[in-house]
Image (cartoon, rainbow, N blue to C red):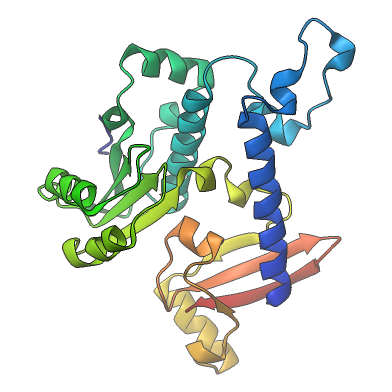
Length: 262
C-alpha cells in the first residue's frame, strides 16, 4: 500500500466529451483494436496520433497494467484537484515505471493509497481498487474491516466489475462517511482535461454567500447541476455546493454561469 501523509447545453457538451474520451480510451486499450493491429515496421501504416491522446497509445505490455496505470493516475489527479496533498513524483510516474513496479508484486492492495486535505490534515481520504469479480456484501464488509481504524473522512472505491444492489445498500449502512464509487472505465481518461469541457471552479462558503447577495437570489434560483453529474462526481461535490463555470470556445462563446449541486 502506498500511503501519503503530508444549462442543458453544457450538459450535452459534457456528455459528448465524456463519450469521445471513453471511446478513445477503449480503442487505445483494446487488445485487438486498430492501435494494436498496426505494424511497427511499416512507418506508412502507423496512423497519426493527436498529441492529446498520444499517451493513451500502448504498443507493448498488458492491457490490465495499462488500465490500472491510467485509472490510478486519474484518481491521483482527482484527489489533487479536490485539494488533497499528492506527491508530484506519483503524478509523474510513467507507464514503464509503473509496469516495473507493478510486475514486481502484482497485488491490488499495492494500488491503494491515502492522503490528507491540504487545508485540513484531519480530513483523510483513501482510494481502494476492488478485484475484477462482481462486488458483493462480503467484499464491502472486508473493505470496511480494513479501513475502520484509519479515521477516514472519505473513501473512493474503484470497481473493475458491476456492484450488486445489496452491496451498494450495504455501503450506505456500514460506512459513516461519504463513499465515492467509480468504474475503472470512468477513470481511463481525465474528463476535466477534455478540450470541450469548460472550466469549473468550486466556490468557497464565503464566495457563495457573496454571489447570492450580489444577485439577490437563493440556492434554488441558480441553474442546477446533478450530484451524479460526471464533473460533480470528479470533484466530489455535495448538495448545495456552487460551481463557477467559464465557457471559452467557438462552440459556446465566452460567458460565465453558476450552478448549484442538487
